Length: 169
Image 1: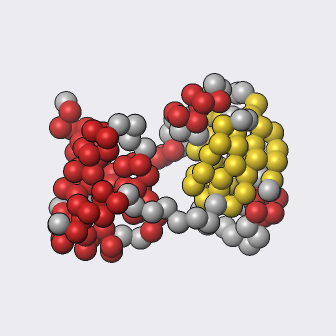
Image 2: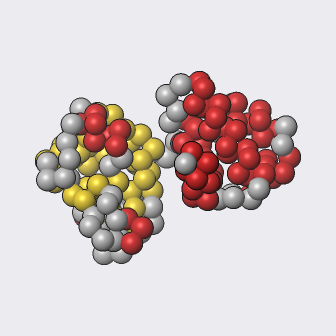
């Protein structure tokens, strides 16, 4: 386990990362968790007293990694850019499993199931984490329906989210 204190940062203009809130995991600390690994990997642990799991660390090309802090994380730790946060991390090698409801719906839609199975693990995880992040059963059901529809039409996760946004307007 690595333990350190760092300052929360936020990207200005940074391509697709514009506006992201994140923390930096220095190369020497990431090396202690996953020696020799230069690509994204998942961790679990704590930000202050808030437990996290299956959170991706993203390589920045200089040996350092970043951990994006989503809205839920920032709300739980009650901190924003410039604040200090205590971090405890270990690698999280547990697989991200699809919810049974998704698997059941996929079994009824062979084309969607085929497309889901052809996705890389990380791309499947986008859908799974989005579905599992639903706070109500109704939201979870809507997300599963959107996922099945998108997979049947061979849309990637980003395209699916954009089409949902357009539908709401």
